Image 1 (spheres, rainbow, N blue to C red):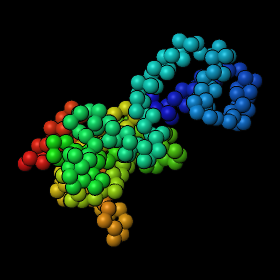
Image 2: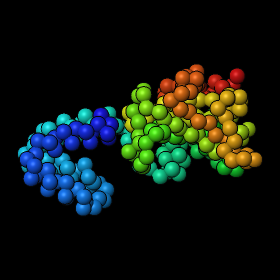
Image 3: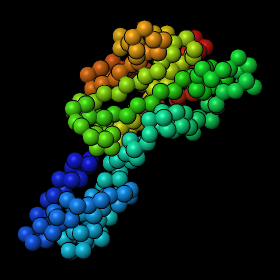
Image 4: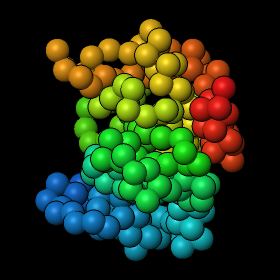
Length: 235
């Protein structure tokens, strides 16, 4: 169940209200002011509970259904910098403690040019979220489930070539996280590598619903990330 399906379900429940109560709810929603975590969905659920349309048991079942299908939805609400740098790097280190934040004690020549270090290998981590390419709104409302038919686009940007040994690309859907590991040479040879800005030194790779299968050979299970990085460096 995604956000669109949740709203459809709530709209169906609203039809159970008598006409006068539906009018009251509509009027309340038109003038509703929201502040996290109190939003339109919370208000509708409380209204339906108060009017006896749903029980607390019904609410719990609906909540469990939605949360289990959207376990990573909260990541779509993070600011870009927090998501890409803070969460992304921390997430990789949590998966394998061999990944460390580099400093001059690990790499005497380190000057902030890459993200993580693992047994001498220099690693750049790039994260992106799968969002509906044809829908407007904020990222949360455009967030997608893995394996759906909707058009999506993830842009892994600010790629600086030849400053790291390996890139880890982290793709986030509301119900799944996918990891691709590419050597610096793999990235340079990718048909989907392009300049981020005309004449600039930074590049980008876009993964979409149309080309995602072409990246399958770089896909790695989370527990294999560290070993895969090291195998690429030691070839």
